[in-house]
Image (spheres, one colour):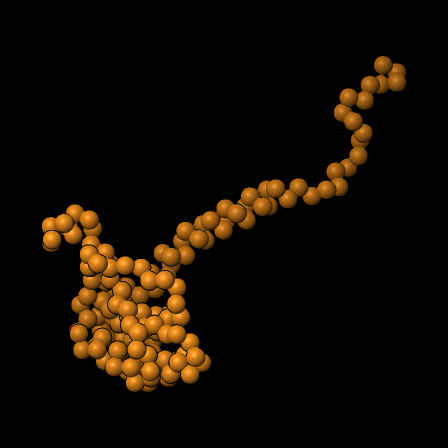
Length: 146
């Protein structure tokens, strides 16, 4: 074996970067983000939506996402606002020529007149399409009520 058998190939340094582990990590992080993104949004404000057997999902539209807390606070797209700011934002969207739907989520313990006041404020701004977010009843409870 004076000449030596070169069983391992040439002794060259590996000059290419293996990106496979990097892509694997990025894809795992993407999946984790997609799964937890919906949960993070719902944790922003603690409200209990009323349930209805006929509740359904809406298709994607330009919307004003409004939460009315049990204390009557108005939260528009994650920030606490007053009725004047709510009206201005609605008017801006209408003036921009957008199709606007007000998605109202109100705690089931909120006073009804608070929700009516929010709807009246938006109608003043020109918003006429409303959707009240509801939690669907569990299948067993829907059958009992029918």
